[in-house]
Length: 135
Length: 477
Image (cartoon, rainbow over all chains, first blue to last red; front, side, top):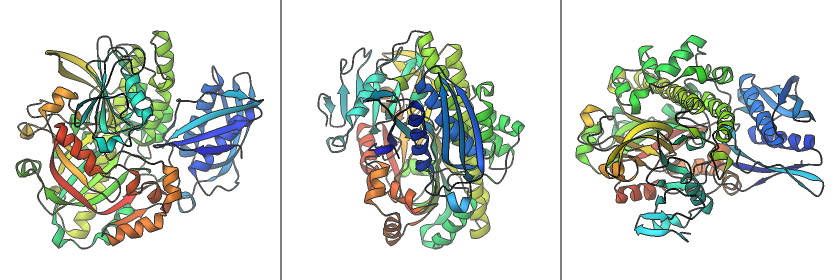
């Protein structure tokens, strides 16, 4: 998976990459899903998301914040996501299973997505971004 | 690690203007040489960055538990002139009114041996961890009242005793709450969670008073040696997280709109007296009230268990005090001999108002307010009293806890949750958590020792030790 965890004292920091902007966003979402729950099986839940923001950084912040919100209120454990981005508009289908206290009870609660250092960079034809999850 | 910092005293260091560009005032950090070995340069830079924000007065302040945070350092205090200063969500954090309360029971350590049974009952009763919901999902109207009335709503509904309200900072209710600025999303998250502990470093702990350092103050606060107490550490849950998430974007736009120059995107801010600043403050205050109601609901659950299982009278379990350590508030302080109305941000810092402050309970006016400093899992917590020195040096503020020194991921790699649980059990501390992972992440040695942090605020005179509390059992999310 094109993301790796880096050291951060108080929170969780992930370096995410992708050869396209969609892949980059997918990496960041998958990094977050892996942080939230250890056990995440494929399931029947499909959630459509549509977002529009003024720049890619804000779009990524909005997507991750929206996934935290949906996971909590719809009680979903996400395991996958398909993303299409045109200009600064995003359409995504996030998939996963229903939350169960027995299976997912030890998960990590993410309070929010940090705006610090979240700059999308292009290097050697690859996109890269560091995301700090406030826990 | 002090590098370019100027030593003012054994426990006070100055970050001089020029450390970063455009600092309007210097910074001050309260720290010993020993704890300074773990001082992160990133945290000092954050403290210096805060000093560049419009309207800051006196100093950008760092408490001894300072570490790298979101925008402001954790353990940071910044006070801004209400007339020409700013308010920033980065000075409060995602968990609005994360805080701590301490409740005494009439039980003594010698006649209490059922810690395992109690912890197991608490773990089964108090909703803990991700995805857990409160016994009752509140209606939209009830949530509206919770956000407006805070702890007093809970007491009015039968989840407490009238004295509880007077033993909370702000009487458990910020009057300036404006629920119009709390989004539908935040409300959706808030309705099922009022009365839940959450996860991470939040906890419910059974403790006993192991040492009394100030007999007179202890007597006034209502605590004596060997007394069994419980401590609750949690905040405004998903509602507060969503309010922060929502408003950060509006405040970022406001920062551009008002042409405010900021050195870090996370220090996005708006003038206190601007529509955007007022909207954030109103929503933040509503979230703070929700957090007070949340801690009150949990208090009620614990009191009911003590009453049912240990025959303790509900009314005999007194709330000693409830403090918030993530908040922005309007307060009047004396600056250079003149009274100023300020917007004081405390981010991982605790109010520590001294004797005579009109904001503290009347019966404690000659002592100072109670200050509660939780330890990390398995370590000492402290009850202190606020001081005049804090009023003069830190806008009446002190530290908030132990302060993390190692990352959660490294803690998970180097510690086994099961081993830590056994080690603590060998010391007579019984831990229940939703996973061993959270126990490993919160291992005692990934934090600065709470005793050292408290020693510094005591030496600096920012708050004085009254009692040391030791854990007997803890539940964690």
